Amino acid sequence: MIDIGAIFFEPVFKEKIWGGDSLRNFGYNLPSDKTGECWAFAAHHNGQSIVKNEEYKGKTLGDLWKNNRELFGNIKGDKFPLLVKIIDAKEDLSAQVHPDDEYAFKNENGESGKTECWYIIDCKENSQLILGVNAQSRTELEEMIDNSRWNELLRTIPIKKGDFVFVPSGTVHALKGGTLVLEIQQNSDITYRLYDYDRRDSKGNLRELHIEKSKAAIEVPYVDKQFKPVVNKFKNIIETKLVKCDYFTVYKFDIKGKVRLKQDHPFMLFSIIDGEGNLTVNEKIYKIKKGDHFMLPKGVTSYILEGKISLIVSYI
Image 1 (cartoon, rainbow, N blue to C red):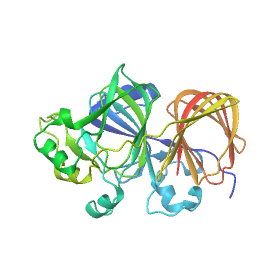
Image 2 (cartoon, one colour; image 1 turned 90 degrees about the vertical axis):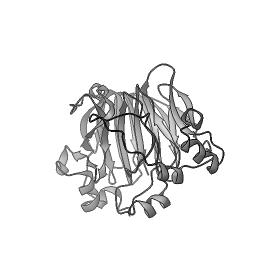
Image 3 (cartoon, rainbow, N blue to C red; image 1 turned 30 degrees about the vertical axis):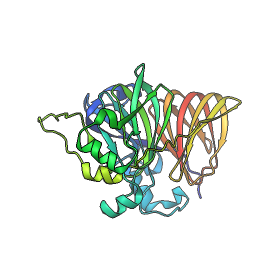
Image 4 (cartoon, rainbow, N blue to C red; image 1 turned 180 degrees about the horizontal axis):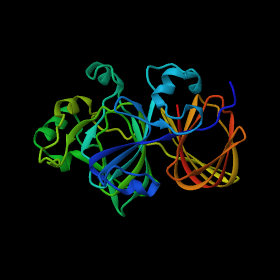
């Protein structure tokens, strides 16, 4: 393969009832002060991130997946496997659940399920989020839902800046207001809304709930499947392995100085959550900063990062 460089993407922004304007801190021009999601790496029919540099400028990630599969090591699959977002939850999100692959394929026109994870970029002091349910059986789950016993049903955990949360399919979950996260997930947009605090949209309507599908998709009793981060310190870099599961592997890199690293995966996705510096790939030098998202495709074998930078790195 010819020498190829890093491929930078322009995100897609999604307005949400619970969104805010904190994504401006990443240097983005937002469509409104109710912007809830930045889709950084997206190849989905509900949103496509667009290449903004090099020979592929103007093409979508979906275009590259369809027509330039060599950039991804010619791995198989009908669609790009990951969706990476930054989420600004100014207000509480609804308590929701995503189905697993089997249920989604059967009930959502062949869609994927959704296992996901969150790196907590920022949150309020003494913050919490919803993760799992307290019901011990499906009968108890359905009874608690039918009788709106939400405070008893929904399990909460404390969080702080820098935490990492793994959210397997079938897990009821919700971010609380004042939380900013980077999310890596399967490439799916299937969400079953279980409880929305009787909140009304801008037109005064209650948002749609998906009670029966939620009941079927929720894993009960909740089983804690959190990963313990593994930290390795090397010269000029701290590598923190956050998760490795069937769908993705996620690391955090904290760099102070200059490091040369290998790229030995079908592709690697990088989201800069703090700092600035330089990226060198095949003797091409790129200025990089907080809010940038770039992919190193197959064909890149090594790269140099230099500066004071924090990145979230994901691959399959």
